[in-house]
Image (cartoon, rainbow, N blue to C red; front, side, top):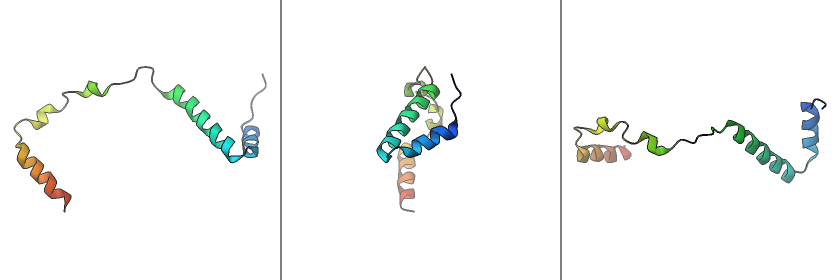
Length: 73
């Protein structure tokens, strides 16, 4: 199989109309995503309970009031 020349492919792409260029871009992005996406997807539930010790001994009402007051400067 002959080697594919990047510059040749790029010049061919420039000949496509805008709609086909965008479609090609989406297809190439999909191909790359498939190669870079891990086989095992992570779950948000994996972090359940992480950092809960940070909230121990915290006055929640005071914390919320301080946060709300910071919104207005």
